[in-house]
Length: 267
Image (cartoon, rainbow, N blue to C red; front, side, top):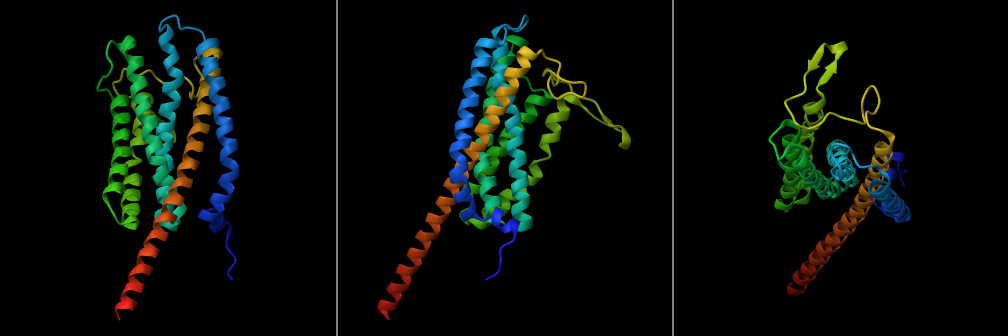
């Protein structure tokens, strides 16, 4: 019997099911605990902003959701690349399972962004670079979900959605530079930020965060909580997808067995 390589072991659906069965409850418990702590800090500890008032509290939902919307698509693109290059079924399971979760977080970012923008900008929506690029990201998620649902052949659907996901990943740098711009001195590349009402980054900055620790700490706690929640949901979705595929394979095998028995009886 040929010995499995480390990569084969790590990408084995059977090993994943056994491992995730132990990890998932722990991850879910940590996510729930961090969410409770994060929401407490956001609602009762973080101060009210002198300009934004209580509206600033929306940031503790909006910012983590926006981060995870982009991270989710990056995960899909990486998983899709792994499926196309290495043909590992678990990579396709990962890509499919992340799509709906990433779409949900992106939609939450759009909704909370609109609620945050109304008192700040006087409108729920403006067609500026950041908001429009995030809306395109949401449509890409919907496109992946719709394309996979529209193709009955799962192998073909996996290939088509993987190609679409890899092509669509170009939206992620556009989301980033829409507010920050881009500067690569050693390549001589300098791209200015686009015309946008969206505020510039306050946490991930070269000169350090620009917001006070009383806001920064609750924000980081919520970001970690939402990230743990994302991976817990993703792992659960992957387990469900593996079970669905197994049940479908068994059903197809049973149908084929019944057909073969019927043909044999007729003969």
